[in-house]
Image 1 (cartoon, rainbow, N blue to C red):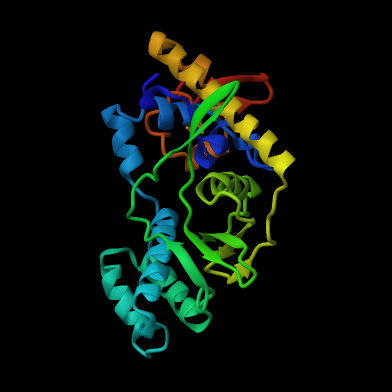
Image 2 (image 1 turned 90 degrees about the vertical axis):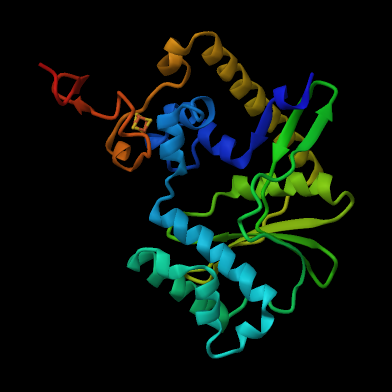
Length: 284
Ligand code: SF4
């Protein structure tokens, strides 16, 4: 089997297959279909290429931290924030994005979480897809993608994988677990912990760890996700008209925030409780 045909898994795919706790009501499989099965269609491609303001903020914040640590003197210089802002071309963004990123940079300069740490990896966000890790066991084989924002070594030699966050969304522990599984292959024999840090509110998560038994069952769960998704893709390739059966829609108010609402035929569905059936807004 050639590498590109192998099933793959990532935190992103996991989050598209199964909702995070508390998000079950708005989880929509059809979004996975658009992102992972129809991503090459011109309309879908164009929508995927558009970053939302929160996405811009996340990308710029990560890049900002990266630039501070590549020009360490800017962390103490009075015009350090301004220098980073110039490198990020912040003036090309909306006022809202610019203001929030500037606040993030100011907060980071005041309290630089990574200062003094033995950083072994810090990504700028421009690196593209990470190299996949091929996981091969007796009964499964899949590629694991894990794009880590930052990895550093603690004073006791523990590997610490840190993920930067912005905005108000809650930390999803599953992301940290995927990083810990990846670390097992990328840094064999090393003890590892993972955590999140919200750059806007300067909040650290608890340290997340996983034992060997949990790692084994996580790996097999990810293999199941990879195979299930691969099967769905094959079903879609065999009969694309079955798109909504393979990737069922879950319409609701959340459609307003879905990037595909302009092309999704289900996004205009409203639930009429009195009829207990879905109706379209423009039904004749
Ligand atoms: S618009 Fe609604 S139904 Fe369509 S993919 Fe998005 S969330 Fe799902």
